[in-house]
Length: 61
Image (cartoon, rainbow, N blue to C red; front, side):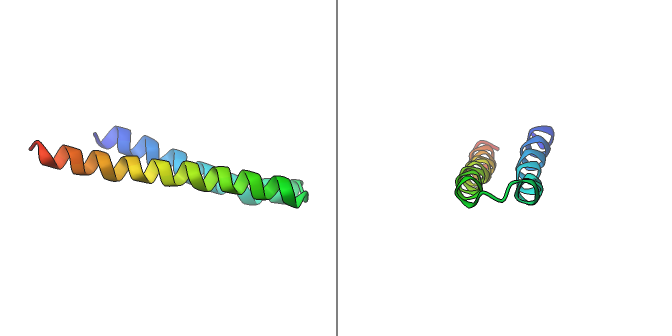
């Protein structure tokens, strides 16, 4: 379970780190807003899955 959790957290952090790099190279605001929204939604989904998995795993111990 810890390896899966580490993979999801690494993926979430990786997407967050890409935003400033992308902004530095692309100054088109509509594109940045769309990519930021997509990234935030992906991060929220990943965090929700971590919480659900932790809760679900705790129920069956």
